[in-house]
Image (cartoon, one colour):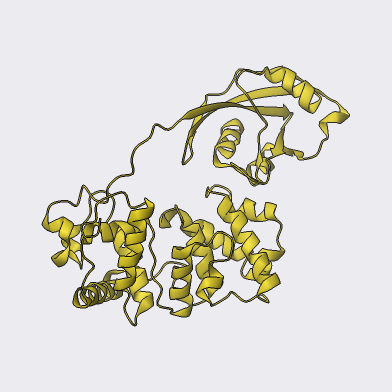
Length: 355
């Protein structure tokens, strides 16, 4: 826990050192930097939730080229938004982004709100993301507290306890607020992000390069590796599913998933339990007479809370009845299917099939 909050002089030293370091050594050329456009900043912040910068850059460029402003995003279909998000993961972020764009058009006359509390009413925007947008776009004195910042504060102020627990997180918010400078919010906020991402990393931190090392309590007490305190470990359950590769010549059938839940709103391969017989399901559910091929090698896909073992089962269509044309399904040639809004493991299955 936090034993003592920093004095004003300590807080001032923390922020001034961080700002000076960021101006010289921080990141300045990322695609979403050097702008005060709240839309561009908002999109980047949502993409960067639980995803590293290197993975986001290419997706961000493609997304902004197709949806350059709030109105364009709001007018697009959710399917197209998901297609441009496909492969980035955590698809609820894309749905929330789309919903929030429509809210901005309907309730804020198409203008991204400047009020900090109103920003937090938009789908998918919590306190830390709202603070980042308010700082970068509107120069407001609002503090962020993402995973990187929690790690920096836990080490610098020797804070023990899992930073995701409500008690520790509440204390970290209170601490973070005491460190906010009166000016230079963009450099300060970016500095917190940069320090956690490039210097005060989860493993092998570069303490000798850290601008805050002179007062870092974890470094002084040789506790850097121990902090932040890891989340209490639980066994991750593993589930199994069979995905049907229903093939008619060069065409494959895709099925749209429900709008909520895992891979909500994406196109996928039909799923059945490991106990069901694929050929029987193909006939009963889709009106397809099929021949079974050998299953493809299974794939293990990891979600936040469980692992999913996927067994891809190719089925060659012998006969398609009219029943095979049904809502929420589509037949595409394999190449076009690969370009659809698919979960990453499904795209990989089709890529392997194409090869």
